[in-house]
Amino acid sequence: MAELMRGLEGVIAAETKISSIIDSQLTYAGYDIDDLTENAQFEEIIFLLWNYRLPTAQELSELKEKLFEYMTLNPRMYSHFEEYTTDKVHPMTALRTSVSYLAHFDENADDNDEEALQERAIRIQAKIASLVASFARVREGKEPVKPDPSLSYAANFLYMLRGEKPSDVEVEGFNKALILHADHELNASAFTARCAVSSLSDMYSGVTAAVASLKGPLHGGANERVMRMLTEIGSVDNVEDYLQKAFANKDKIMGFGHRVYKNGDPRAKYLKEMSQRITNETGQSELFDVSVKIAEIMKEEKGLLPNVDFYSATVYHSMGIEHDLFTPIFAVSRTSGWTAHILEQLRDNRIMRPRATYIGDVNRKYVPIEER
Ligand SMILES: CC(C)(COP(=O)(O)OP(=O)(O)OC[C@H]1O[C@@H](n2cnc3c(N)ncnc32)[C@H](O)[C@@H]1OP(=O)(O)O)[C@@H](O)C(=O)NCCC(=O)NCCS
Image (cartoon, rainbow, N blue to C red; front, side, top):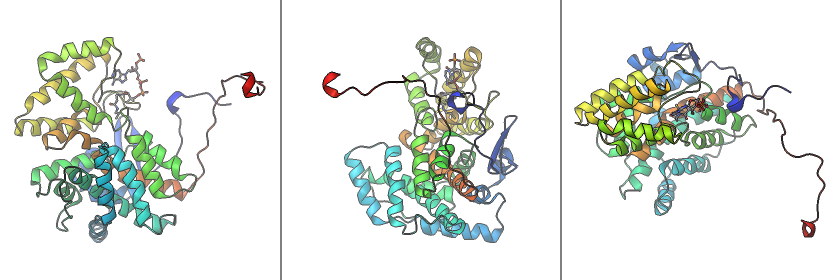
């Protein structure tokens, strides 16, 4: 049997045209992430990931129209949220349940034809923004906010979350953050989504499984924990002490390290710039200074560089977003990648079924319970 690769490191498990990481350069369908982050709207990225090409003006306006239409949720979803609120569930737990619940309101949920899947991808992409934003409001006893057709996807998310139109600067920053988180080759959650649908299960199952995978602190759950760490550290003077204790305990420092990038995550530089600007504008530059100090020590002592989750934490915090919504926001963006992977998997499917090396006991005989 083939050699065991722990954590599937280096194993090629799929062919893809969605995104690539080559020599530390990230591209979506062949476009450099820098080019897209500087110039594109998140809606164009959604189309690009699903179709491997940028949309025409007509296609983009049709997509935007559909995204807006599908953003409205079945009212039963809100009453469901009230139950979750009683149980004080984390928004990622709520999201995992509610993405699965979306399937209850789609009578064609099991139709896996390409056209039906493309429509369902738009539907899920639209609804996931409303799920995260309205859950955040319902848990605070506020009314959900209906989307506004004149707003972009990024602006609508912030509007549905806060009930106030965001500024142009906020929309620009949030749009960039959505683009940077949209896809990342065969990361744990995208692989999970592909595994789930490789049995010919439905798209809701794939996205629910992906949300479940993203939730973990080694993946998307890291950004919330970065903010927890920054709050705990409090000031630049405490950084050295905090890190030395963490190193002594062999604790992982959230927001650092990566399975694929060893010379830095190309997404981090934008988020660092954004973090510097927005923490400064909102009078919270100490948070940025603490972050930079952590990054310096991590590089010096561990040779590790910040990943996408490190500076995104201070960006979202400075936008007034609650810390437990950071990972759900990651999910809102990454849904574009997950649905792209599900579409791609089902275009040329073969069930995922690797092998395991058995290392347990052998040749055992059943012992009746009274003799054990
Ligand atoms: C991203 C991550 C899961 C990659 O994991 P991986 O490829 O399996 O890498 P490993 O965990 O084997 O790390 C290799 C070495 O670097 C160390 N390391 C990796 N990330 C570290 C971190 N964030 N803090 C401290 N040490 C770290 C490991 O302890 C290990 O050291 P060792 O060889 O002495 O045991 C890992 O770097 C991590 O846990 N980072 C923190 C969580 C995070 O930010 N996740 C978001 C990813 S975008």
